Image (cartoon, rainbow, N blue to C red; front, side, top):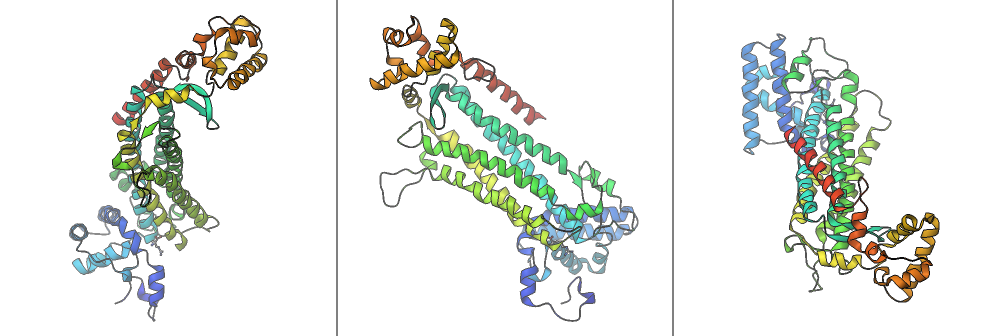
Length: 463
Ligand code: ARG
């Protein structure tokens, strides 16, 4: 059988070349976009008089039939066809005969693949975005329930200041808000229609690219034919967006791993999302968060891989860019399943508020409040107040106590000031609610942040 591009060849391709060269094994994933592109292109060819009505209808119906066949798994993807474009075109030729041979007028596989792949990228951008919103919904539900739940806030993984658990959930959620925005931005930036630019320089047929772009809801046709077939920025944008998202997920996953350990006991993962050990019968392992933490590796790898493929390529199309797809498919699938399972893990875990409270009683979490008291009530410069507080902490440590357990006389003695009222200041809840500056952890501020994010979510869902 002769190749669709076989005219200038006398000899046969080697089998090895066929295997090495073919992309059908993975670009068949794009079949629906490829058929859509062909339909739009055929309609345009009809519009500019390259096809007559009968030919257009024959091509359109033929494409529909191929689509049905693929859906019913009755289509054979053959390595011989090399890629999805030629697989569909040869099937069409078999189905409707010579008319099919007119379809490739005024187009090239170079613009076809950009169209197919860009459609995939844009559609999956939207799917991932929606899942980010679903996850944010769950986070805000948890946050709302826990604006009074005291836990130790940490820096350097050391007890720092008391916060509420809702505040921590809000902190997670704002990462996803930025991610969502990043996906929206790249969608806008890349929502330009590539078909109709030909191989690299345009076509002499007067392709009506505006009409095609409009019919599919793109902002406009791309500006420059050469750039259109050579750039893969749209795919890199998606890979970067997913990398940021997965980096955030990996941080959350790490906290879930820590929090479900005996050392923390802040949460217990549901049995539905925990695994056992094959040797140690007592164990319940956080495999899901660990995998979520680990998945960022392949996703970052996919980004770097495509950056490396693109680096140094001359304009315009080069076959190197065939290497753009598998990594993107992998990152997209990884992001989707990660968002789905993280949502499930969060909505099914149990939260141990009493253990959070107990842990907040260790580590002198309110030492900063003591220093602030000296500043506000005794007019002592903060540096000096810091020093005095350090001495009080050292005293408590020596007695094996937390500063909240010292009495006012002991504190006054070491401070060399009358420290009346300090016990209440050192109370965890008082301390948490004292941090009521804009963006702070005080319950009222946390609630404010939650309602801001709820409005954002509503806006995204309705807009
Ligand atoms: N399989 C190719 C790719 O993924 C499609 C475009 C091929 N174009 C060409 N002139 N060989 O990039």
